[in-house]
Image 1 (cartoon, one colour):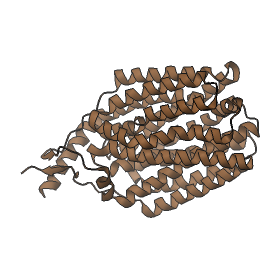
Image 2 (cartoon, one colour):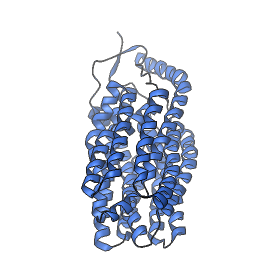
Image 3 (cartoon, helix red, strand yellow):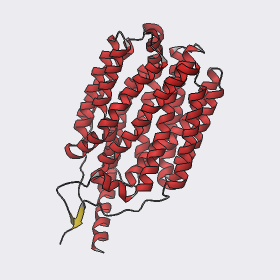
Image 4 (cartoon, helix red, strand yellow):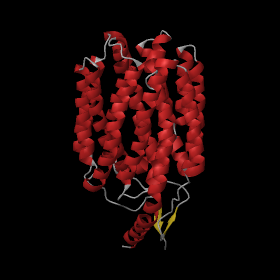
Length: 421
């Protein structure tokens, strides 16, 4: 009884103090992420052209994409745990500097090896950014508004994702393919300054009436408390990112080489995808707070499979844009909802560690997807087989989520705390 009372008092404290100021900080971080994502998005329409101009293969583009994710697999967990110990803000700032340096290297690269090296360094330096950002949101919110907050963060990402590719497509179309990398570096530095000025380190209090032990529990102990739920979320996240990896390599090369799509048209494609996702993130984020997380993740997986099938049968720009719109709905259903449910399952002191683990799962999908997409494209000369594999993986993710995810999450006493005697 004493444990339940202490925990309830702590949760009541967080509901009244954290949620009010937390949403303001979340919106500030979302704006910073918008600036960062503009920098990311600027170069999105350019990579396939850059690789083709350097005489590289589809597999080379796959390695370029996978190298970023591979280093993040190794470092996302440790960087997430580091953010639990040293704070979220220092990790966020450090990552921005790494993004800026990597983009400067891209701008002056003369061969694919240099680009892969820069991409690897970028992944290593940035490994802590997204786990720290997601953990920051978890720190500053409660289960009552967490889905909404994750929706704002995803909206910030996608707003930049809309603006960035459009700008990148225009710049590449008329001013060449190297200038956008310099602008991306500047955008990263602007984001660094925004974090320094506006984003404050969150307070992470321990429950009133309890005392924290000197060390946090091992991550494996946290995962063992809800092994079915965590593993199912991992599968759902893998399926989501696997499809995006296939699209970035096999699909973009197909529409560039086979259909002759221009950088501007690719930018518009990502703009359509982003606009739909922005709207969906707010709608589905709020919906997940009111109606629950599980079935939005399940539905998003099946809608994602439908979008991949639409890409398979599309033969013109209109068909590509239609597939992008449906994919935007799927992403906005799954992305913030998976992050919110992960936070719901996790103790406040361990958010960064668990977000790091989930980041490693996400990045593993982004290693396998681009590499497989590159190999199959080089072998078959088109993206159909890669997209078919992605459809199967997305459906498997939906079925697994329907079976394995809980409908509700029970609050419990953190394992690293105990009542005062």
